[in-house]
Amino acid sequence: MMDPLILFKLAEFHFALKLDHVERVVHSVEITPLPGAPRVIEGVFDLAGEIIPVINMRRRFGMADKRIALTDRIIIARPGRRVGLLVDEVGEIVPKCDFVPAAGISSGLVYLEGAMYREENVVVITCLERFLSAEESVDLEESLGECHADS
Image (cartoon, rainbow, N blue to C red):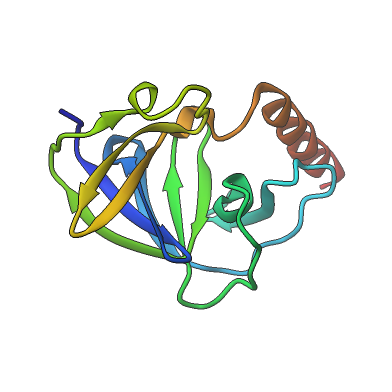
């Protein structure tokens, strides 16, 4: 059994994230590019005085980019450092559910924890802790450090 999940969409694809990692969901905002950051980082924004890096989930999963829309959402989550996850739509919260672990689907699925079937859709359960590689995390921290040093 999987702990409660929050559902989200990218294009026509359905994903989920463990709810215990999520702090809140906010409407899309203007995101400032962050020079030197990994490609998956859309940029940063200010959330109540804290600079939050935003991961473009379409890029993370190798999907086509799209212009950020007012209807997009940013999931504020904490895999360690607080980050925003730019997604097209946020859906419902799913209580405990049965799922197929990633190892039962295919080997080498880095960003996935598993999958489940819900309302005629396959929902891919993502693993937030692996959204940034060690190298990407270091590059992001260096970019953020340079950003703070310039202020």
